[in-house]
Length: 181
Image (tube, helix red, strand yellow):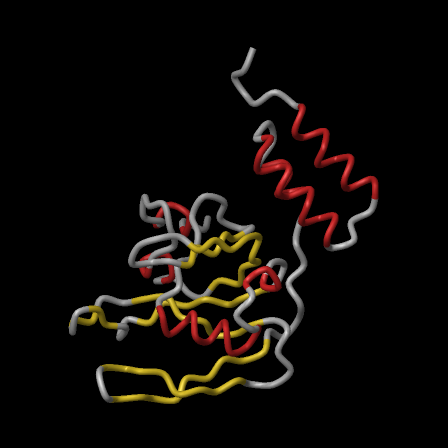
């Protein structure tokens, strides 16, 4: 029996510790810009409520590969991995980096700042196959959560979903959540 899920830290975002057991391929469902130290919040289909908050270097990779308009990132895939040498405040604390991306045709390499005054080449590979969203599983996870299901419906519609799938998502919005009367 795989115990990977039992190792996940209790947190409201993806953390380096989530990637100790290996990389993960994820699908972007939404991107928000907020105030604070982590201004970009990348929502992931596979981890609702636990977004990826890329550091500045990874934001630069995303912008270089897909452009600065984060609306076009929705529905695209990333393979994320934990890099123990990522530092913050001069100390290695570990961080999440991008190993591969959908919607790029060949490896993308760009110089990123490692520490003040020092840059190093960083390369991202194309994802071997496009990420396919499991719309039904997402709808099932969100059953009864009308706001999240509206967003899922809009994403599915933008991605050309058929009427049967759209109807399924709509039905999930009207299904009472477990324990409701």
